[in-house]
Amino acid sequence: MNPKQFIIAIVLGTALAAGTFFALRMQVPSEPEFALVLPAPNPVAEFSLLNQHGTPIDQTVFEGQWDLLFFGFTHCPDVCPTTLQVLAAAKATLQENGQVPLPRIVLVSVDPERDTPELMRQYVDYFGEGNLGITGTLDEITKLTSGLGIYFEKHAQNDDDNGADDGDDYAVDHSAAVLVINPDGGFEALFSGPHVVDNYVHDLPLVMGGN
Amino acid sequence: MRLSILLLALLLSACGNPKAPLVISELEITKPMPGMHMSAGYFVITNQTDETARITKVSSPQFEAVEVHETTVTDGISRMRELEALEIPGRSSVVLERGGKHLMLMRPRDLQDTVTLQFFSGDLPLLSVNYSFTKDER
Image (cartoon, rainbow over all chains, first blue to last red; front, side, top):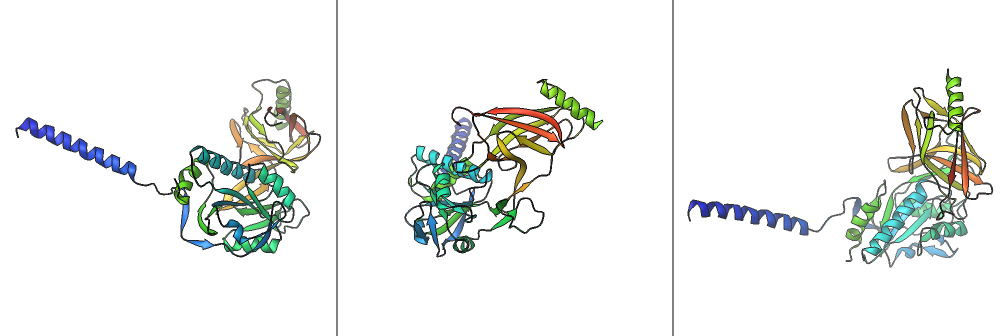
């Protein structure tokens, strides 16, 4: 091999190595970048609540499909509809991309005092078909939320004290996370805020599997 | 001095002067959700004077009450609180956006296609703007 052939061999070898490296790198399966996946799914606690049609439901309502759980309340004009819009937009994009399965969007009320099944029905229906609204008694809501590490607390709007019981003029502080529940009814992963459509579109197929 | 600026703001904004002391842009008001009696308002407000402007009251003929609220997320907990005032430093803008500062418009009264917002400092009117819902929003 003369010097010229040697140089050509070096250049070709380097190009081949670089090409192979980038090709392999692109083929490496992605990992979720935004969702925190639990080391092992955590079963949802037992509860007895109502869906948006007033039908009694329990923890088995989460079995058989992937669910995205958001905890909010219908009297919330800002962050709750914004988050549900993000989830609905992400689901629509996943559907356009041919993702199977698609997750169900679930709103769990942290204001069961005001959130009747009828209000929940109107609210969740606004964000598309097939959504689930959950409400019921405060005790049963707390069984569900505490088992998932979800915090919520009433806060009077026109009261500097932390006493929260001021008639109807109150908001509810609540966890901002969206939880992913697997078809076995296990808490699989969570998305912390801020909630961005592209984050869900990227990570949900990886969390849920499928094509 | 402050009173004169406020009066000037009122006069100029009322005249639709593009160099009005306070200018609102990117205004968006959401329609009340089905079954709900509240909306949210978002916009950018720019103070074109050298002095801080302080909005202490917002009203609308189309809503019984309008408040300035702020949503914050700290340690994963979302909290919404009413603000006593909206301060816009001189030569600056304040953004009211989803998940941040926003208007909360409560209990609509014969809400049709247009919402008028009136901004006050105390009892002194500063600015009045109109928002028309798009065809899709109606």
